[in-house]
Image (cartoon, rainbow, N blue to C red; front, side, top):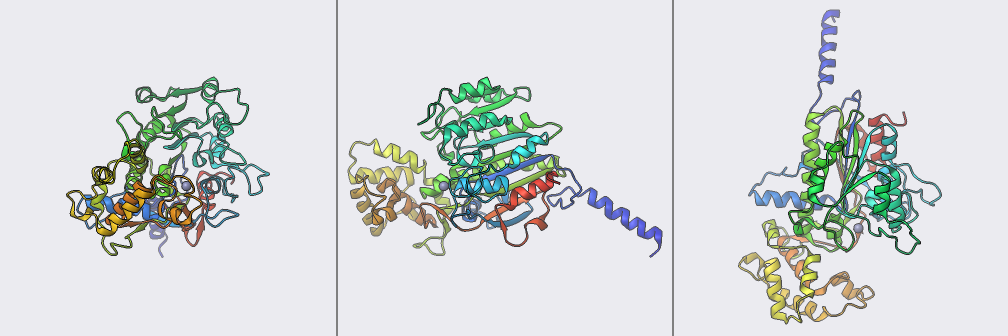
Length: 478
Ligand SMILES: [Zn+2]
């Protein structure tokens, strides 16, 4: 080949490599400054795809692609097992996902025999000069967020985890609050919020104060004004105007953390898991969409900084064994029915149990109002079989002792309120959604990403591979 033509081709190819700024940035030459690490707790492929199909049904579309996460360029999957159990829990899984080290069930930020701390990628990113943000809709000391800053032998050591949070000196914490701000069984002489303020955190817990935060507000601890008994934010389906959304939390975190050394933000959709434990499909779909709205914020950021940004959307495990399609409806699904559910199962149980001795007819009225069952929608008419199941559950609803030790009751109600649980099960089935468990399952989970080398996620990958690949992109440990 003529030397001149050869060099012209070489220059054209090189220029194309440099201008590679779509969602396929496979060049390894760029320096990554911004990392968005999204974790949908309990969000298997069926959870996100149910949300995708719900959005498609609402838009009367046979085409899919409504979820932001499904528009990310690379999709794969990975295994989630713990070192001592095939079906993992959040603490073991997040330890693997933050540090690349497999550990045992309930262990947080320590190796399998709990003798050594693991080093989370957030700590390495901080040492590199990046600012760190941790966002979740459950309590800020819950296993998944804590796996990025805490080291404790058990994930339930919430007070000690709270101390680890403050001592991490990370730049932004947002979402739920502390479970035991004054300690639980230990002799705690320090209130965690007071200690956070003493340690230089700007603590806000109203939407107004939150909206006024800006890049000169210092280190932030932003807690939603209304928290549930577990110090978590409300489910999306139950949200009021003055509650934070994950999208708002992320937009504010970006505004505050953006700087020339970049940032690392972990955002968890933590209640997807809780809802799937309860087999509450409609509320789960709404929470997946709220989580996905936040992913949209990161994708807008990516458009502006394509060569410097990594987005990862992952999950710690699947919860509930959710299926698209159910035993009674077989090949038919009808996700437009989802909107008939007016509140989360948890809210419904709270409200229903406050009714003074409702008779069976009154109980049926309640589920008509809140789930549309036996209302005007033909697809939600109760069959004789449904009524038999509801009557049985109604009779069982005062049994709150022994459900966990009675396999028949446990299979039917999972330890939750028998009547409301059965009503929601019937509602799910009519929409075409099934569940096989009240716990986590061992199925591998989806991985969607942009900004990492796709060659890294070919073949069977594992949760321990995620931080290793992000570290590579950040030039850590090189
Ligand atoms: Zn769980």
